[in-house]
Image 1 (cartoon, rainbow, N blue to C red):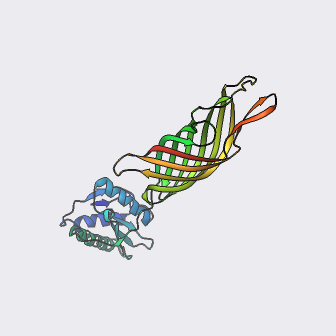
Image 2 (image 1 turned 90 degrees about the vertical axis):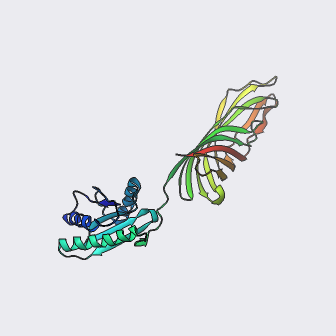
Image 3 (image 1 turned 45 degrees about the vertical axis):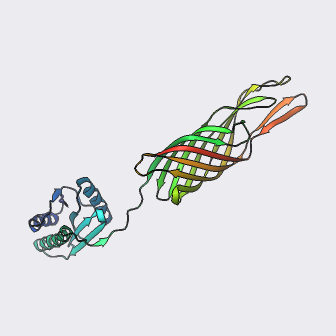
Length: 298
């Protein structure tokens, strides 16, 4: 059991703590008195009580606070089973209020010692934000390189409850496209995403961001001169479906992604000969994308 006994608290609180020492002397409890200032709101007091109980391994936390009307508020929390007992002692002389407050706290602690429950059940705490990171490989079927646009993918995600936002960066590998002219193409990207997490490890969402294509001629047929390597920027957005497998008690898991990118400003591959400009392939506007990553919570 932890009793919050702030050394610089109100004299009424200090007196109530002193009276509590006497009231619980015959109970089967092992009190720890800690010098922690009392927060101004009950929500903050309950949150700090949970931290104190976890740090001390205690079942109950007791504290006193001077009420706005000059009375004394008594609180006993059992964070493990999320119960809270609160008793308001009406204004009176300090000695009477301190004694009444100590007796109220004793009653709650005696019930706990006997295996009972106290007060009312507290609502569950709001979900905490969690940072996640993943690294893996993705393939986009963009009509460019023969094996598809492949890239190393890294994603950083902040999740809170069922919602999550992410920043994904990919670094494309230069892969060849055959034909009259052989070129190397790479597709890199930076995108922001949002997702709604469902049951069974599934999540649906959307992502939008910039693509950066790099082209370099490897071999050109007779009559054509290779052009200098070039970068082309484009914009992509589209829906995503994710599924993750994260075994309980294991630090890392696996995540698979299926997405469909709609690309604005997709580049076209052209060559120039005696007859003029000739297209040898266009990057698709609609690009299916799949990925597989290792994911871990930070």
